[in-house]
Image (cartoon, rainbow, N blue to C red; front, side, top):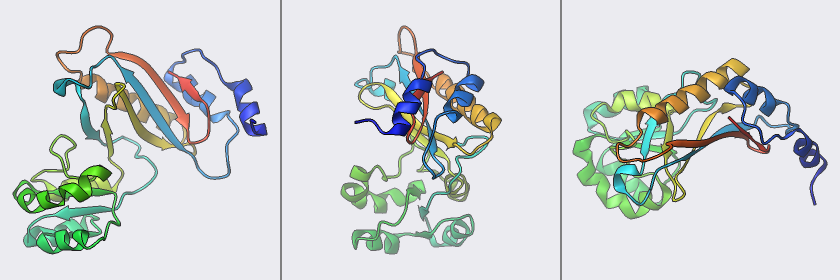
Length: 221
């Protein structure tokens, strides 16, 4: 059975694709819960995720942020650890941090690692891999610029990757954001995905773009 809110939102929903500004405006007209909903984007792409070179994965910083910070840890040498903590890392270190995670501590959202630390971090593959937390060069979480990466991810840098259906999901802000801020983030994200189009992808690349709140119907862009 549909709730009163769901019934009201169903009447406001539209199957028509709208320009970004109109899509954001339509999204804000839906009746929502009391909490500040996260705004998500879903892009259906004309790629074959079974092909390694078409399985997109990466990260980007949005111009208006996403309305929340992330808990970041950094696997790095001791001389960089203090700087990483100053940049926003909740913890930073080498083998002692690995041992702590092996002991069960998992209170973080993103793990950054310098390339020279991956030989130590690799033993955490079975722990971090299934949770999507293993540092990866493709996602920008294995980098010699540890301090800069910590700053960006702490501020809410957005990670993305294609799922088995060729879709990419990401957060582009909060429903409380000003319309122009959400539009700017939306357009920036779409342009970013356009730039990483695989050379081997054939036919229409971006097939469908939809934005939605945590508890709202989707609006096609």
